[in-house]
Image 1 (tube, one colour):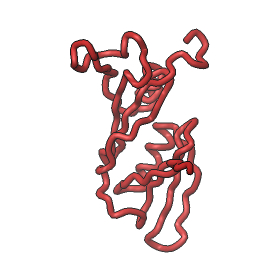
Image 2: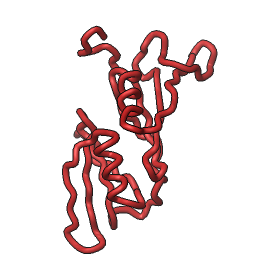
Image 3: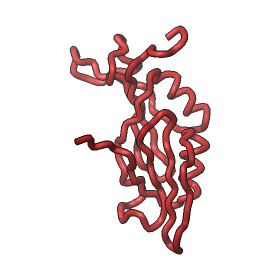
Image 4: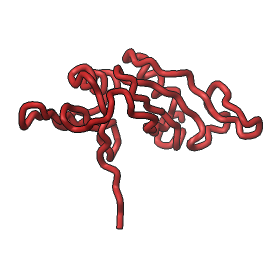
Amino acid sequence: MDYKLELVIVPVSDVDRAKAFYTEQLGFALDVDTTPVEGFRVVQLTPPGSACSVTIGTGITDAAPGSYRGTHLVVSNLEVARAELVGRGVEVSDIRHFDREQGEWRPGVDPARSDYGSFADFRDPDGNSWVLQEVGHGEGEAGG
């Protein structure tokens, strides 16, 4: 039996502000924006290349806006992804990696560019947090 993660609900206080952030600044595709009845709005958005979408809206969750934490967005080149988001006005943390030999976090990408080894973080306007994580560095990239 397959269990496929296809949708995650992200609680927000202002649906239009969040929709603009996720589409214009993060580059997520807008799949659905519907209000079938008053007080219930569903806005479904999908990150580029992802099989899983996120939904924001009204009347869909009782979770507090900003309480969503740490979902990872996997990218093949963290430096390029971070620069792209910063260029779109997203406040993204500096890149860091965990030095296994020293047992501590260090600045910059993992020197070996190991899968799952380099990270950067950002938050949406409500404070929901996301993690960019590098996997497959150089795969399918020109000059990679």
